[in-house]
Image (cartoon, rainbow, N blue to C red; front, side, top):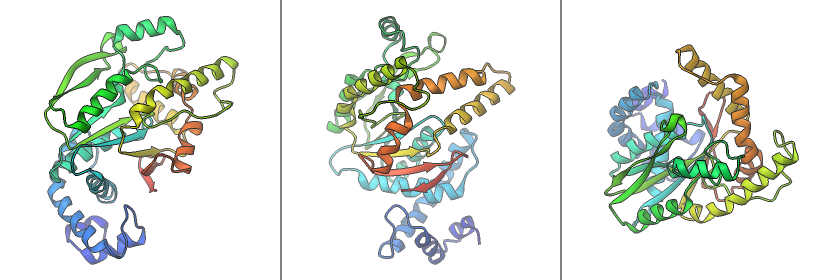
Length: 326
């Protein structure tokens, strides 16, 4: 029988055996019965809402992913929530790792557990357009939004503190990436009257300053090295924000070069649909700009390998799917 058939037939015994063959999320012989029973009940409650969201996102309803990742991860996050305040759950993941899709799925499933989750991105903390123009005038190297120094960190600290202290309603900052011809700007904040869990995601959420010579391609010239050192120094300003995270989940791509491939695939699809898109050379330049700012091999790989400030690692393979849970 397939996994889907086992789930739909509520074959607990075989599902328990299957779970123990490759245990994740703390499952062992002592708790597998209760865990599988709870997961089946959550599957039954969540499935129709998940199918609806998959349709909206133009994704196939992947039963395997729902059973092996989304459901147990939602249950794990629910278990991490403090009894007296909101949980601030961080997600670190680069472009193409699926962090936005994941947080949307978790929001739906957590609601079936009676928990209101709010998805929020570090992108929503970008400085207003006029401030970023002024920043670029002072430092012409900041040609794109995204690197350390382009966010209002103090605002982020204030917002997460409000969530932790239950100071509702909260005016949650939001960012419109289409404003000013794609440069982006702040938009109307979202009013939040209650939240049990904040799913806070971004491409360097939780990343801390390191000691390094910064000699790794594409960091080649002395100007590149100075840029990397300056971005590393900027990370110090983000540490007080990271200190407000209760937990951190890393969507880790061992082969970080995949981000170029994924971006090219996405741009090629846009061009094929008659939409404007970047050339391969422009994509290389775009991706390498962020590697020069915070190289994944220097900043993220050591976090994963040393389990430093990391609670869970989801390894992402070439097909954008989770291949291993650590």
